[in-house]
Image (cartoon, rainbow, N blue to C red; front, side, top):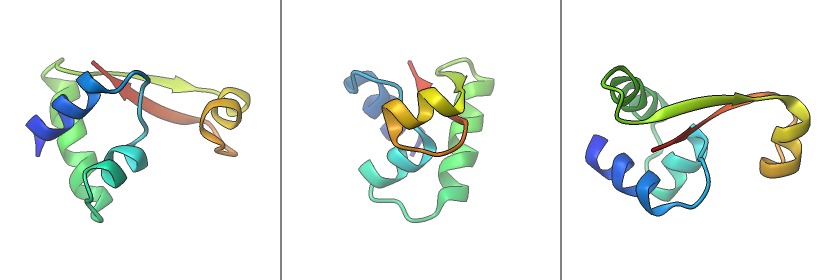
Length: 71
């Protein structure tokens, strides 16, 4: 699963949220995705940024701040 997340993030032109990663990988278990993302973050294979509510609304149509992941 970690390799699939890495490949997805490498191919994607914008940072993705945990939910977007799960959706694109057809994975319903968000806890599984979170665990894999945390492992990738610890290994410094991916990066994370936290975006504020206005940016989240503009780019992701989300009404609260959120974290997005990228390579």
